[in-house]
Image 1 (cartoon, rainbow, N blue to C red):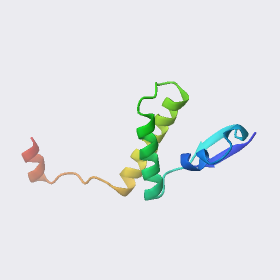
Image 2 (image 1 turned 120 degrees about the vertical axis):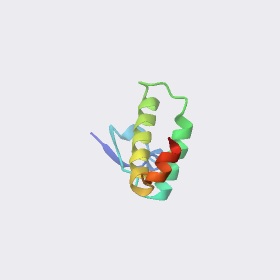
Image 3 (image 1 turned 180 degrees about the vertical axis):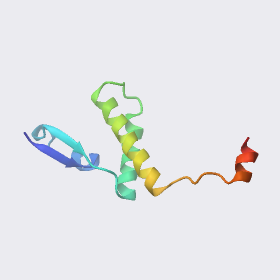
Image 4 (image 1 turned 90 degrees about the horizontal axis):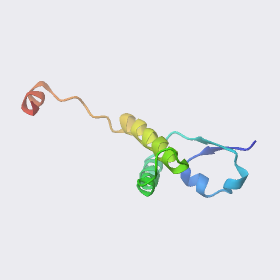
Length: 85
């Protein structure tokens, strides 16, 4: 059984017929993040339960994880929270 560990962009550059199992890689750089967003855009019309739909779901999860670490959203201060209400 052949395994592949890497980004989807790296996966696109290999012969997929030689790979049995794909192990996705956590997004670690801004470039990987941008590539993941571009791939998500390509997959937006994928049907759930299909390989493309599964890839979309996984990429969205990886992007959300990256954004929580790299671009955290601070909770609003008390004044901002009251204004929002």
